[in-house]
Amino acid sequence: MALTNEQITAQNFKSFYNQIRPYLNGNVPTFANTFNKSDLYSTDEQFIGRWTDGKPIYQKTATFTCTATYQNQQTVDIGISNVDTAVSINGMVVLDNNVKIPVNTYANGTAYCATWLTDTDKIVFFNFYDNRIVNQPVTVTVQYTKSTDSAVTISDGTEYSTTEQIVGKWIDGRPIYQMTVQGTTPASSGTRVDVGLPTLAQIIDVEGYVVDKDDWTIFVGTQKQEGVVNQDFFVCHNVSGDSKIWFGCGSSTVNRPYTLTFRYIKSS
Image 1 (cartoon, helix red, strand yellow):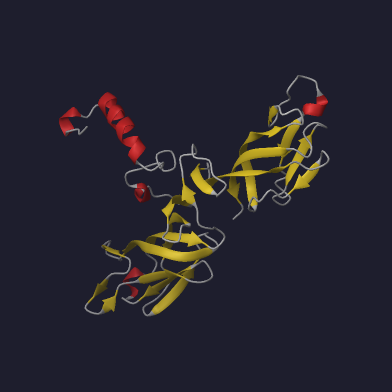
Image 2 (cartoon, one colour):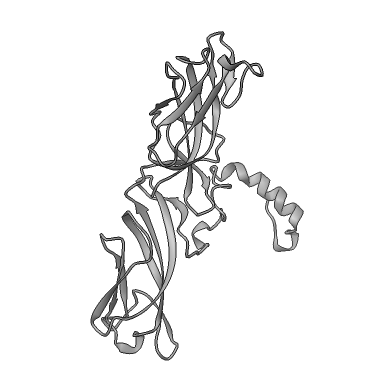
């Protein structure tokens, strides 16, 4: 189905969108703008894609004032951390006559200005032009990966995997991860267990089940029969602690196989 400009209405665009959604590789709910996701600029760090090594790519836009005089430089902290790969840096600088030129522009062998990320997670801004940009505003947008991340797959959340995958974006712009884990509940209730999750900032949601000693499937946070304590199955996480999961199990759900799917955000 193809649409011309004259045919685009709210209803037929929705139909078109629903038809192409299966071909978008699960990225529809992950990105605010599926068709050109990196063009949504924000002064908050946001997840926009995946780098060649599988790590998430983040983007952030910052504005600062040039204090570097001609043939000097300044270091600028724009509030990012744990940078691994600097994917790209671009932006604009304003001359004193209000002429706007791109960052990293060269003319007649002379650089107007240049920036890059250092190993201290800061931007180094060079003034290789003249003093016309001193005290003038500079806007840069940086894209980067983080050393604290590992390679991930991207999914719409309907594909369950024991490998960590990105399924969306949290309210503060950080990616939401999902991973399914399997194991055996501890021998006693109230025990904290390492189930293989990374260092967490917050668990957003958890779903799953345990198979009790009578081969009943008891879903997390529920009981087979109301008020029957020995069939309890609950899990909790202490955000001020490590990534171990606290299991609350009745006598029929200890030492039993479980399958749990966690959705979470990571500590920076």
